[in-house]
Image 1 (tube, helix red, strand yellow):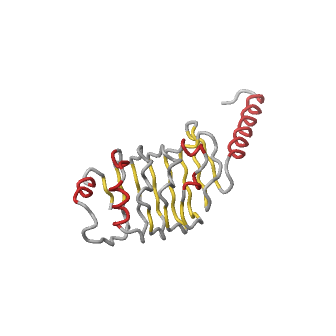
Image 2 (cartoon, rainbow, N blue to C red):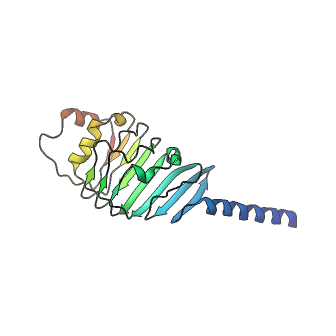
Image 3 (cartoon, rainbow, N blue to C red):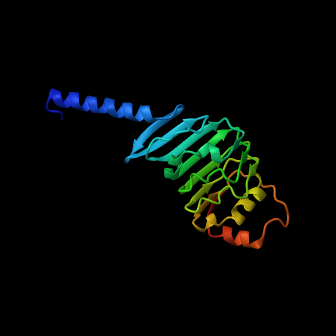
Length: 190
């Protein structure tokens, strides 16, 4: 319980300064939250140009881009992000160099109802990735995902792969037996 009027003034001043800090550093169309000295961002429609210091988790919904590329994540502070959730919007392609500046990701969710193309090297820099969630990509074919996973060595640390609602268009003879053997070690969600 607060014992004096001075303590009440101090705490209210502290809260105002704290809120001003959080809001001034927060990008447009984003809400920022500090959790254990790390910044979490929830953004709508655009990928922020500048991230606040200590940003660890970024969630972006309703992205109004046709494709994702490296320049979308070009700020040096993207290297601090460990969890990235990209959901909804009009994205239909993810290029090979898209996540090169977000190389410390441990969790990545990509869920776009219009996604059709996923470059073979889209995940090649994500050597620390433990969870890849590709659920909700109704137009993305299994062949495209298989190519992206088979070619890259990032799968050495991958523990969980979510392919729920993936389009199950499969070209015979395209997949190799080694790919299916590699899939056996994942916790695959359907």
